[in-house]
Length: 160
Image (spheres, rainbow, N blue to C red):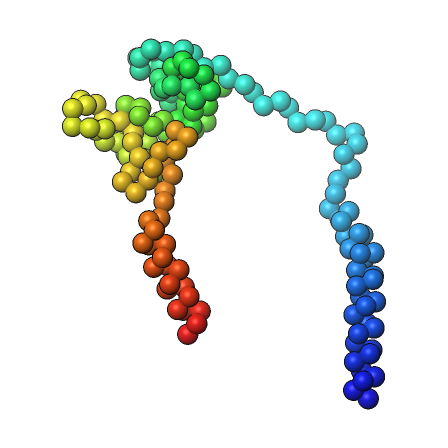
């Protein structure tokens, strides 16, 4: 009787595997919409950034800073996320790294408003202590020691 049940289970499993692709193909069309007779999405607006030499050149465009264009070799009035303003408006409300600031709330994620060094008279947005600058943004990192401690702790909690 046990052998008989084993063969039935094996045969059921084989039939399941054979029928699985047939049944799953019907599920792949669920939720798809008909793409015919649909209008294409509107094109993304492209902004043109103004060239600048000093911060005062950008004062007319709110939330822009005179920074080095990451794409070109000129300084431009760019938004805090280094995109060009669209119709004179920045959707990103924070200042770019190394932009002059008055308060931490003006700087983006991982940045603070402080003096870059002891000799600079103005405060600028710079990366916080445990962050590093990469691609004109502040990225956080967990130190190697903290990573190892976290790994050991998680292994101990799983084991016990």
